[in-house]
Image (cartoon, rainbow, N blue to C red):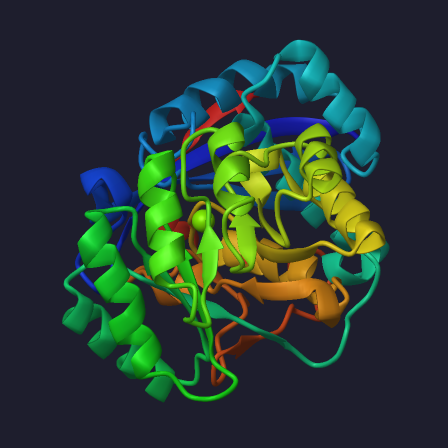
Length: 367
Ligand code: MG
């Protein structure tokens, strides 16, 4: 099988809540997502998606994804999309870095591999563990009381895991954590994600102030060394996210005992192929994972579900259903949340069919 053509589509994904706010005064109201369509000489077409969380979250932005895909796509013409190792080698040789650019192309090739073999991506990635898996809900940064109300709202919809967007004023953040924690039930899971927004001394102070609260601390500071210093001062379980972007960083964190959980985002590490490599390494090392992406619609939600569902449940800390946050559906067949849980499609490939009337005309970038 050979790749014969690649198209890309830009799509706006507005949020049901109107906006999503996190550390540093950052917010997004409409996500700018990109869908790629990979055509083959076998008549099989694969789809992938990439959606950065605005330009300030990671070294990635939506227009950069499209410029990068247009740059990279011609290098894939003539290659066999079912040989994912060769596809990734070709992308890494043609473009250094820019993992998010490669993510949607890699995802589309997994979709093709699944369709060609008649198997869901989750089966190709190791198999389905159980019927479904638990999701977390991200709670946009607001006043402590408003965040507690938001948690109760999503709790009533079946979620039991909540990730508070903190990383703001330290005193208000301490209040956010305490007020929300006071309203939780036994079995609920609370994470305070500062998204790099605290300085080291602020983070040490906050972690100390919540030492008796059942809460996980996620990515308190910008740099790995700052996070490690905070980790060494707190007894709270610890999650690293933004600084964990490849296998080497996972191994460094493991050796330093820098975290209990990592947040594994598909586009942050360059696609499903590399995310699966990190996932399997973490399973072998006993490091739990939140498996998700930087954001996205139905196609990314489907890809997340295949990777999460094929992960042993004892090491799957949580996952995300991004398609429930946004008002636009870009594909049929994507998994839909059921009482705070999600399951991967049992159809071949990603199990989705894009809504071309939503995606529009698109742009041919290769072939
Ligand atoms: Mg995070």
